[in-house]
Length: 474
Image 1 (cartoon, rainbow, N blue to C red):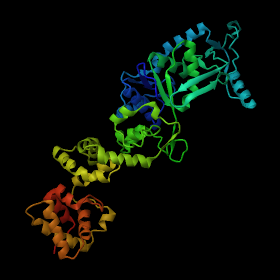
Image 2 (image 1 turned 90 degrees about the vertical axis):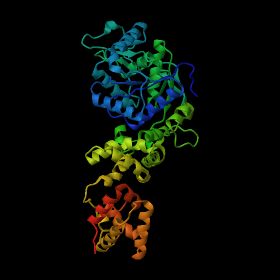
Image 3 (image 1 turned 60 degrees about the vertical axis):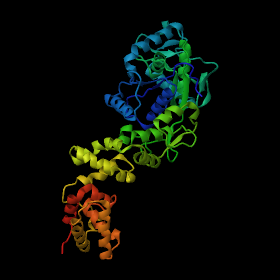
Image 4 (image 1 turned 180 degrees about the vertical axis):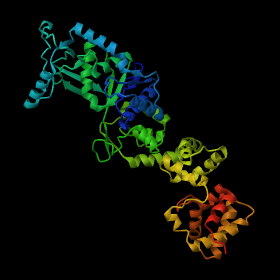
């Protein structure tokens, strides 16, 4: 379990070079939950030092995705590029203390080093050419980079809360660049300084950052700061065990929203990708905050499975969200499909019908489309499968049912059921055979909730009008 004797401050630090993907969303969720569990702070930092690839659209996508998931930063987001002068100051201090040096290697020299390493089968790394040279030997026509003078002996140990002790031999790490030739700071320098200035106590991130952790730990120690606690979580794989790709679900969070997934279901699902609490599968946000800690994080990669997410989403639609919450969620999509705003009377109708529609819906898009027939204009558009049900014999029987229902004084489910039963016995027809063409006439489809529920939702006049459009009267 994590040491939380100090104030817990976590962060999510995405690069705005693309969408907020599902792995990033999980990292954000874990950091958010850990902070909330320990009564700490969760912070958001936009690592936009890559100016060529960073975009405002990607930054906004991150903000929108975080808002949709309800992962709110406790302070205003930090933009890394805006802090570049602070990063450069620390690099200058490292130069003065002898923990960094100027490197005057040209691009051609660096390319030769890489080629030589490849020929020898060695790791591609900087050979330390300017590590111990005197500045007096510096060429005048090359702007230097600033490199970290990494320790070459011994080892760096990361006491990781998930992976255990991760040991890196120091001679395996070269002297990384801190400041580029144009004076701009690199990611490795910026991350270390920002984490310190933001008072980050725990760094929870993917295990693809383990090598970075060793480099950053060396840098932190050289500056004289305390290391944060590290927790490196295994990455998410596809259902087939391969590296997660778009075909597996490596999509932007906005794509899941467009596909009709609920944020509550997505959070519940990605929470279980790499973290567990016994055999619990359905976990509310309140429970997640209460239970989440690093001792529940696993060491093995988790597998993303769309079918499981879909089933979980269906559960949240059926059993977790109230009808009022569902109506609020589907209303924008439904109004877009209808091409108009829903009035208060129609809202009441929707609320009364959602119990039926949500039992057969696995996503919000399906749920939003299900009640469309309630608002359809006559004559209804009939799908081919339903049209086959409206043959001449069916139209004659429906005409008889139309006459029977027209004479009802009370439009109640009991009276409607009795009228249909009486006609089916009189015509020696099974109820299903009798009601199939009625369903087609009322909804335009061969699949729908109970026809008797539809009678009630539509009311007497609209029901008879729709049946009349496809009835034959003797």
